[in-house]
Each structure stands twice: as C-alpha cells, then as structure tokens.
Image 1 (cartoon, rainbow, N blue to C red):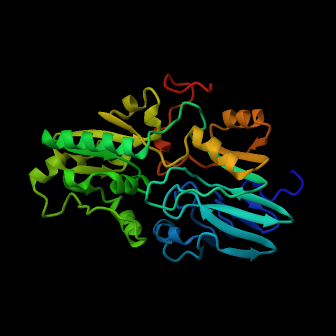
Image 2 (image 1 turned 90 degrees about the vertical axis):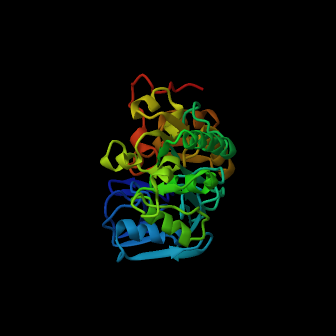
Length: 353
C-alpha cells in the first residue's frame, strides 16, 4: 500500500481507511458510497448507502424501497471521521457521480463510470482537480471514438423513418437504465409512436420525475395502439427481449442494437441484428485522455476495461499509473457489458495506437 493512500483495494471493494467506507463495493459492507445505480456498481446487502439525490429513485427500485439511503446534491460536502466527501457530475446516467475525498492534505477522486459529451439526460461531466484519479477504462483503446450526438440521431431517425415508410416496426435494443432514456430524449418523436418494453417504462418514470424531457411512450398492450401504429413504431427493448414471444406482436420488423461495441468488427453479426448504432454512456479513447488530463492528477488508478493499454499510455505521459482489479463491468444490465467481444476473438480490436 502506498503511503497516504486514501483508497485501497480490499476483497469487498475499494476502501477508504480513514473514512471507514467503501466506494461501489461488490460485497455487502457497513457503509457504501455509490457512484451510480447500474447493478455492477450498486449491489444489495450493505447496511447504509450514500449516493447523489438523482440516484434515489433507481436505487430504491433496484435495491429495495427500505434501504438506508443518504443522499447529497452535487458539490455538497460532508465530514465523516475527518474525511471531507463530496459528489460531482459524471455524465454517465441520471444521478451518476464522481466521489471526491480529502484528508491529510491529499485529494482523491473516484470517477465511477463517465462520459464527456452532454446528452441532455443528466448533468455533464465536470473535471475535479485532484492528486489521485481513479478512472474506468471500459473503452480504453484507440479504436473507440464515438460519433457526435447529431450524427448518431440523424442515423437512427433515418433508419426509423425508412422502416415506417415500408410499414415495418423498428425494434431498437438498448439497456433499460440510461441508454433507453438517452435514445428517447434524442429521437424525432414525430416519425411515429414509441413503444417501450416493460423493463424500460419504470425507469422512464424516474427520469421524468427528475425533470428530464422524454416523449410520450406506450406499452405494447395499450388498447389505443392499432396494427398500423405498430408498423410505424419505434420499439425500445432491453437485449434480453431478443428472440422472445413478446416481439411477435410487431410482425415483420427491422432490428438494431445501440452499443459502443457496434464499432467493433463482428459485434453486429454476433448480435444478429440488421443495424448497429455506435452509442455508449462511457467515455471513448479521446475523452478518457481529456478527462484524466483535466484532473491534474499525477497518480492514476485504472479500475476496469482495457487497463493494460491505458496504464501503458499513462506511463508514457510521465504519470504514475497502476491497476485495481475490480468486479465492475461484468453485469449484463450495465452499459454494453453483454455485447463485449471475447478476448482473442476475430473481432477483438488490436491494442495499438
């Protein structure tokens, strides 16, 4: 353990010794600080949770309505055992936060998951100056560079409009929390009705209650939907809905998958869909570089994703870099995890600049 380390690796997760709390632990603990409500970062069983106020609805929906949950606004500071702790926007999903801790003259920031481009569904990422930055690296390879929001949604809208003109439903697979709401916020709702899977609508309600502008959505069983409506509809569903009887009600349709992995050769073929839209709620390679540089940190710890490549690049920049082995990114409910290319497969990108 490095001298003056404010966060160390333990079997339960990332632990702050002076504060006696964990950040996104993967085992039940007494005190857990949660960066966001995706299920690989927010797990059941801890005695007490602390998170941003925007995560309250989703955390209670996923972990239980009766969890012991304390919330903070962005920038609000508390003192716990002499450790100053505050939460700052991560731009990943609603309520996502970076955790800033200060003790003994040192400032550390744990990013959780983040992205830099503002998508309009949550406050955008804000760099926080620190001595040590703990960063994700889900897409930490030079191949990963996302299209801009206008380009992405122009492609999705054109695909939907063409299908509607041909009287075919447009089934778009996306993770129910974060990704689906981002799609709803960005598409052109004038093209046709929007139908959502039962796993998506409760999370839409959380976003709407937080003031996020989402267009009207319908369930497939809505009695007001006609067969003609279904043939023009955009249908948002989680990947688990693929190949299920639920899809039969839409008849002939075109399907697509929204994921950062769609940039990788072969990912769309393995998903068996007609189209792949490159969309992620994680930072791409240039954004990871920009975010890390903006912190001013001299020491960087990489938690998950393409850790070896990211650490090598950081060391080449003259920074002190290391890896914490974590259990993040392993849950299929999390952004893109189920579509990740297998190591060594023909579609795995080469780790070259």
